[in-house]
Length: 369
Image (cartoon, rainbow, N blue to C red):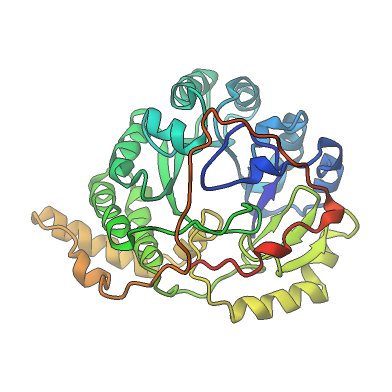
């Protein structure tokens, strides 16, 4: 099973696609390492995320405690605090560091509200390589504002020796906004095609399988249904900064327990979890965030057959016929007009949220078509 641990809602980025930084958690209320110690051994993948996880003063202690519990431990970060990441990879060089980046140069800084953010990320990657990090990567949220730079970001990741992942823009209960939709779905889906072609030419098998997965990303962008059942609440789950456990990072009505007051066994096997799994089976969202997409790659037979066929076609000078692979005539109408603005350099006073506020209810009906 995979877990995403949202360690904090504090964040030193001001992204236009996520307003969690406007509603940070109080450090004294954030889930303690002792609570996270309740998590079982033998997990597949644990992702430490936020907000920005490097704002946790006890991040190193959390990594020390969780690294033995999972086959793979990953930190999803904006990369603006390289010193904390350096200390972690010096001690745990196999911990994966995934740096969020949404464009080259000023484009990233505008979308993510980070003054000098792109340059700081570049510097962080160099420092982490020097510190001995074995697994680096870049992660982008594909949107209208960066679609033309997707291939450049993939190449940038390759230059640093890291991999590259891309998620579709989506809504979720922690974002405090519901307009993460595309203004031009077909253009955005088409922007993924050069990335798939480049991945199939790569020497890394992992890239080949990501290419197959990104066909699903294209269908998600167009608003088409998922082709595989969602494994939320079974194959993966999410823990929020207060220790509450959810089946997925999208729907706030899929809470399955509270790790602060329950054991993991009671959470995972309790009646709330059973009810959440029933709701997941009826869910009509076609999500494709980072926590969900890996599940679509679990079955290797279909992707393997697809990869082999496309590699043979590529050897003969051909390329994927995307109009046969994806139905570009089946395009959903966005339920809401996107209204995203850059917060770079703009003043803002955050409003802290507390566990007792139950802050997610207003986002229960945010859709991801």
